[in-house]
Length: 217
Image 1: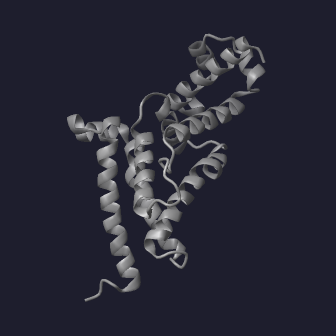
Image 2 (image 1 turned 90 degrees about the vertical axis):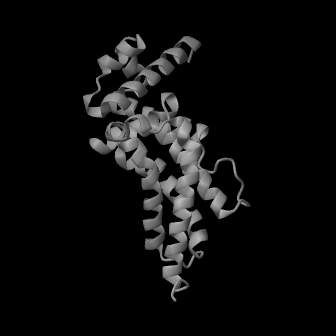
Image 3 (image 1 turned 120 degrees about the vertical axis):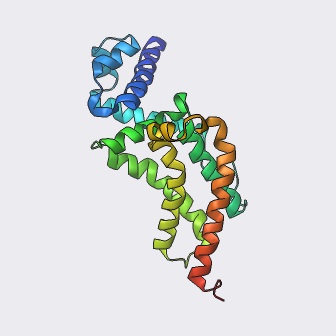
């Protein structure tokens, strides 16, 4: 592929990221994407095949980008404590949820996908969402007592923690109206990560005590 061809393909991909993340798959059109990119409609077919294939390329591109910019492990090694690894994962999820620009594209795509799912959702869950959930579950098993911990308990705790982070992406219009000038932005990710980690660790200790009976008087 020539440099000019690479530039055109990249321009179409970036334009499609913007349009799909703003309007969702069903309300987006190839015409709108090509207008945004300043490219001929025939080039979408040439580089991607059709709208569905373009959408597939978009979410994969967006997920690869955000995973590089905000890795769940935060650059920590396996030797880091479970508490530190949990904080890193929470911090990454918050940065993704609160981000504007290219870093926030994947979160906005997922908001659109949740509102009006496509056939691509199964691939997104299996290739993007499930690995993230599994990563957090491994940390939680370490905090809740190891491999003997009830898998359902681990899943429930994972959903509780991810929910605290992802609600910030999923409910932006409600959040902005509810909180007004106290709304959160990218600059709040560090502080929110500290808060949600403390909150979650306290909850995990309570869950562990209830599970083992350590908290009984």
